[in-house]
Image 1 (cartoon, one colour):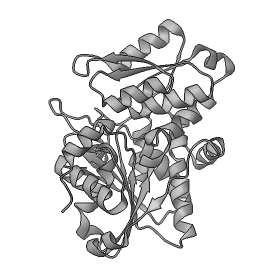
Image 2: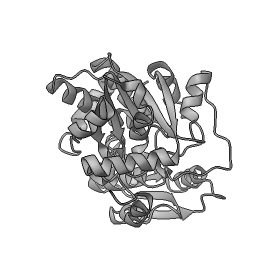
Image 3: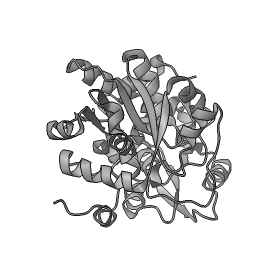
Image 4: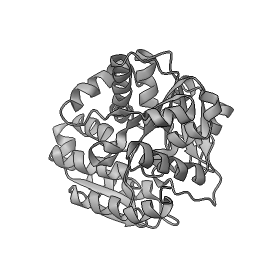
Length: 324
């Protein structure tokens, strides 16, 4: 199981490898909102998202024999880049299975970080099966996107950073909201925050029609999403919470929020206007959840994690309207 000692160990592994990303706020925005919003800007992390944290810790944990066989992963883009960059730095060959319609910046960067990229049709293909087949044929170690305790320990280092940054500024956060796909990021953060900031209540944020974590928390068991929907939040679109992540989140999370694409675009606009941050749609989901539930937080202090900023600039411009 995942515990705080694993996350603390992961933090030592990542020292000098990953950035301590800033915890940002805008006094003007806080005045408008009527509460204090602190944004953990993982969009400024190496590779443009939090994913390099877990990928580096996971690949670092492999034996020499396992490293010699290489690694394989499947991802819509952020995990792909994290695995590719971590593997290259550790001298390990990486093969990444990605949807052919993934944002061009994610496909390009994954290859430039040194990985072999294999694309598939998102509608008809099974990325997990493709990756498993490669693993069986080549002996490469499968690095899953979220359902792995060692991987989660790397993501949980964000929780250590947030708790330290709050403590240094003598702030107690009432709540923390984090995007959720398979649930590995929020499971890691919640585990660290329970140890270091138990006063902080943790919530997930997901796009509507893909709010499997929110609905699973309500039902008390893993439930999947209905087919036939799509979302601009490609980085956090999953079918069902992870087998390993959900028991952790069921224990540690207070609930979850579902946000519309309009909510997400509004959050991207707010992050650009007030904090000069470029957030991808999925990365902005937590900020969207906070902003569209503003009355809930009046007079409180809330942390929102921006998990990534890997978005094609043409798409970014098409989402956002010009500032007034």
